[in-house]
Image 1 (cartoon, helix red, strand yellow):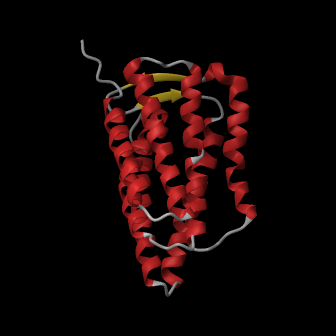
Image 2: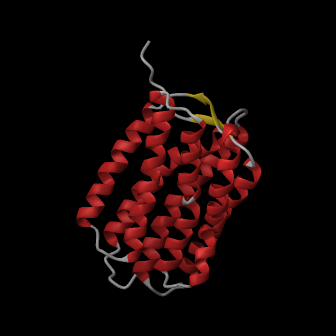
Length: 220
């Protein structure tokens, strides 16, 4: 019987790879755009890893760990990009990446606890240690990002930055609010929260591509 598990991940990975190539060729070269492309690369790598886990069967604890290591850097990088875009730059912001780095260092010591519990066509369910703590550090940067964007949209006089910030804000709201509701309200879906979030993040990827193409500033 044909194994279709992970096929949505493969589809999204292919599309994201194409979008990344387009941005590399056409986007203005500034720090915000370059880091946004890195963000898309992390999304692409996660979708690829999930396809390897579910579609190919390379579901070792190490591969699952790599998937979590990859997505652990997505929220702090997203927040860092938004702060840079609004010219809020400080070396202290590198602290944003500290939790992801600490998880990345700790998790290899308990790597045998990582497993893909179940695979489907659209998502995967995982078992891993410190799930609640990991979730706190995963959601917190996104929540801060959303609040920060709302504040800037309400207070800034820069029409172009407000427009592109509204674009990003809608991207994050559309990507994260439905996925959080699905995983909290539908029984049994909480174990698939990371996978479902990254599937909805495909919507964010589309918004991000438009944001990068429109962000032609040379100063950030």
